[in-house]
Length: 190
Image 1 (cartoon, rainbow, N blue to C red):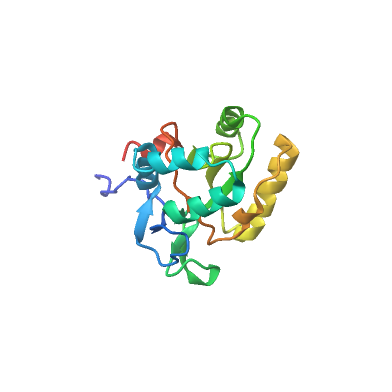
Image 2 (cartoon, one colour; image 1 turned 90 degrees about the vertical axis):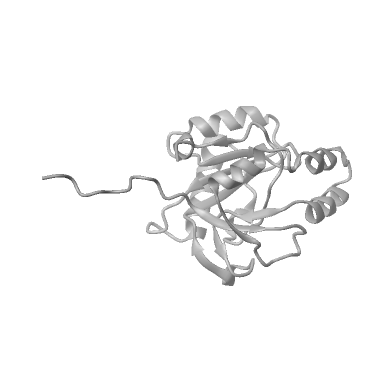
């Protein structure tokens, strides 16, 4: 008896994309991990990423980033960027590391971590941090529960504090230019 036809293509998590500035809280469209990866490795954000990294004053850099970078909400699809605007959780969470002594060293450690499967990993717009996109199991706890567990693990294993903003489902994640962005290879065979 022949096997029934099955489409073995993987479901790629989708989330909301927002056009700059960050004050725009209505999404432009839905994109997936491959789309985000393609944007990050492209030169679309190169000029603004380089400009941001040359701004020495923190408040000026924050203003520039807020005005000039498109962003996504990796944790889900939203009608509006607010926790109450969540339409569907993507099963992803963003763990944000700021002001690192060695971006490359932590990047390799995270990629080698035996407990978490990295979906996407890229250098932050500022250049001294990382954005680590990993899957979470919402049947085992809420978004916040998952965040707290991951933050505790990172503190114990790596001795690092993660940016607490990752606890928010509607967390805005700016899209920089990072030609060395990592995407889980399972998505490249789609």
